[in-house]
Image (cartoon, rainbow, N blue to C red):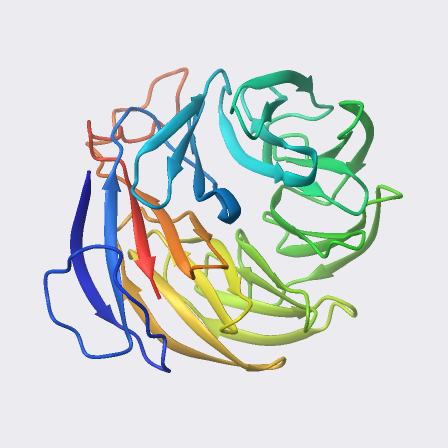
Length: 346
């Protein structure tokens, strides 16, 4: 079900059309926020857009929901993905991959039918972020508990290498030419990897950063954008590892994205319910344009580069249950039928 829940001003000429009826009249250069209520139980993590087929892949605890981005309808479900975190797409192979954190596995599925084709055991524990690297034709899982990276040959479905890293890997990005970058959350570092040799080539300290999570990449200007839990976005030169800039963002950031055409860096901030929009004026200078209100808990995000639409996941939560001997830090339950996908139209 699609509902309009508001309009928020954006500056610097980010004009666009709303994707649904809106509740207020806005001046030009506005962004409309719409949502699709999907409901269902369980938490969520990464979102992945397939712009060519108008699909959004949504991780939901033990399954992946596939939503039509044009109308919010569910197109299918990829089941049996226990503890799923991320979804990687390999369109040239006609396949997709999910990282199943509780099962220490990857589910390969057919991009056309959405049916699983095989399950691949990884070499590490709690695979979180996942990435398909076209240059090496390999799938990389970034394993939080074992603090390493599993490297899978996409053609044979075999693990061909395990790369140890300095701490807990988080979001990752690739340049398409054989370099992969990943934030290391607990050491506040950024690590560069050669995808063909499966070796770490550099590890750089992220100054002014605590617990980096989301990572975005401007391949043209060779700039990396790490969003950190202390309310900073750190800009790093991808060639030298040099610190370029520190930019303020909202509270509780998780994901980051870079709009290639409009030269905007985005940070989705779940704690205060905002998306920070940052203008890249040149490769070394950045300016915050606005913090657009979204919804508290809207921490994960995906950007469609063709439509410039931003997708975020959010829900309402009940009270946190008391701790038990087997669960020292229980999570608050998602309230029934409250899970939704927010759509921000630039």
